[in-house]
Length: 251
View 1 (cartoon, one colour):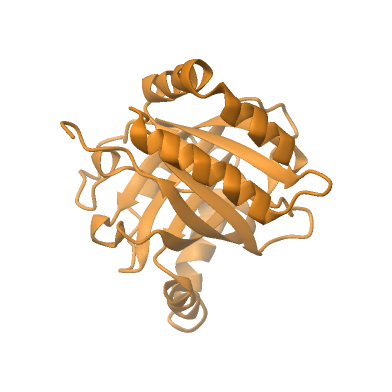
View 2 (tube, rainbow, N blue to C red):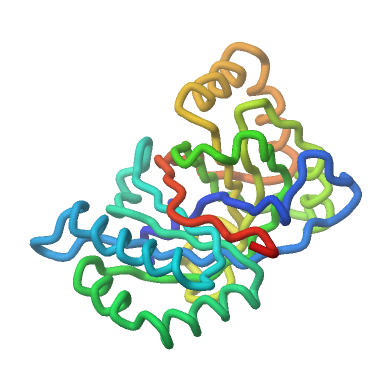
């Protein structure tokens, strides 16, 4: 679980669960975010892992399997956070339960092949979507950042949530939200109470954001947040690939 302390994450929220023009006074409804932090077993390669995933994708496409499924590999990451790959699924809580029941009943071979290829620790978090730009959603290859934070003394969750809803986002941000640990995690596993999760359209979009922070006074807004609301560990960045998208209702 040590790797979860730096990475855990990705931001992915479905069209139905996020909107760029949502009411800033409304508290977003949480969705389930399941994360598997994985390392390759001895003698196994990323190509072996890809073969297992491709078989799963084929089965999912032919079945009523309806989650948002992504993989993440380190790009800019702390030395303490070096998993080979991180898999993440997003859905409603009921949707995650349905997905597990379907795998156990219809495709138990996937779990057996998966466990032969990678060693993983799984956890469940509550993810609160704050922003989505669905015009950028069709791209399967993106960049994800995660920053773990802890509230300043005296800051309530309501105050923090209000501050997050007032954030503004550039045109390169596909998703932004906050996630908090729930299942499969113990005290001390994480370097903070919650994580900021951001998905950028590509590496160019991430660098435009970094330029804005460095050269266009973006650092002032970041420092104001750090001084008044939360202390944060700093952002790690991962390459993200969409493996599955949920079917639209009625398909």
